[in-house]
Length: 106
Image (tube, rainbow, N blue to C red; front, side, top):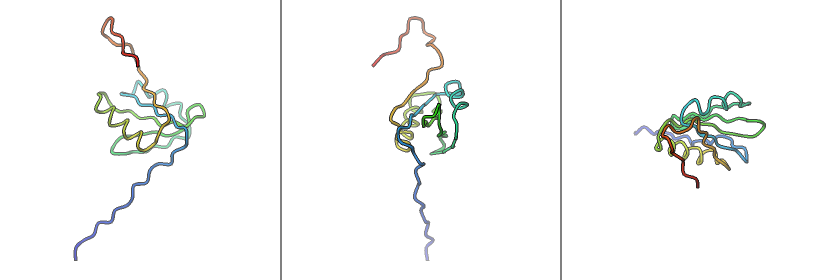
C-alpha cells in the first residue's frame, strides 16, 4: 500500500472589489502607509508578506518586494494574481543620486 498525500486546495484571500495595490522596495517606502492601515490582515504567499486593510476608508493591499527588478516583478505578479488590484502604486522614497538624471515618463 502506498502512502497518499492529500493536497489541500489553496484558498485565495477574500478580496474586496476596487482594491488598490501598493508595492514598495524597502521599509521607508511602506512603513508610514502600513501604520495608517485599519482592519489589517496579514497574508503570506510564497514567503512574501502582504497586508490587506483599509487606508482612508479604501481597500488596499501593501507589500514590500525588496530591491531589484526581479523581486519587484515577482511580488507584483503575486499581487496581481492573488489580489487583483484595479490600480498599482509604486512609492518612491527619494530623488535619484545621479545629477541630471530624470526618470522616464510613460
